[in-house]
Image (cartoon, rainbow over all chains, first blue to last red; front, side, top):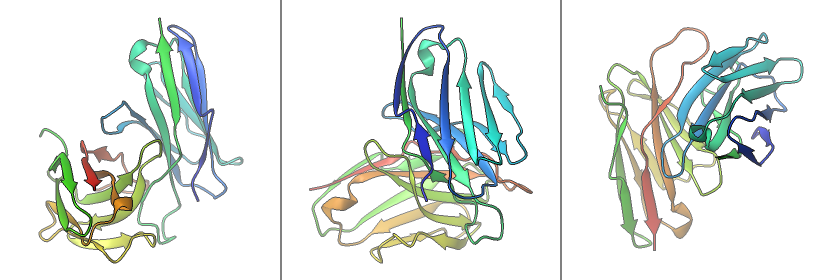
Length: 114
Length: 116
C-alpha cells in the first residue's frame, strides 16, 4: 500500500524551514528519501532505519518513528537548490517476499523562492 | 563509473508496436530494479533482479511486459503490443550488495515512452 505524504505542496522563501511527512499503514523496515527535479531522475538523500535512527545530510535531516510508522524530513534554512519533488520510499521487513522493493509515496512538491 | 545509463532516452511508438529498453547499472551492483513513473506520481515498482535472477515481478504488470538480465550486468525491458496507457517514464535503478537493510538505489535518467 502506498505511503501517504503531506503536505502535497509547499512554497518557501529562501532560508525558511519545512517538514515533509510520510506515513505508512504497514510495519516498515526502512524509509528512503529521494528528491527529483523536473525532467531528472530521483536522487537519493538518505535512509532511515527502524529504531528511530536520525540521519543527516547537510541541512536536511530526517527521523523515523517506529511506533507510528512515520518518517519526517526536515529541511532547514532552505536554499533555491532544494526545489523539487520529494518522495519517500518504504521498504518492508525481510522475508516478507518483497525482495527489497521500494513503494513510493505520491510526492511533495517543494518550491523555494527568493 | 558514470552511473546508471538507459537507452533510449525517448521513444515514440504507435499502438500495437513492440519496444525494448536497455539499462546499464553501475558496475558491481548486483541488484537492478525497473520502475514506471507517470506525471505527478512516484515511481511504481515493476520488477527486480539480483544478479541474473528475476526475484520479483509486480502483480500489476501485464504479461505484455518482460524483463531480462542475462549475464547479471545490463538489463532489458520489453513491452509487447504497446497501449496508450503504457506511456510513462521507465526508470532503472541499481544498488550494491548489502547486508541488512537495502542500500540506496541509484536511478538512471529514464526512458520516456510515448504511445500514439
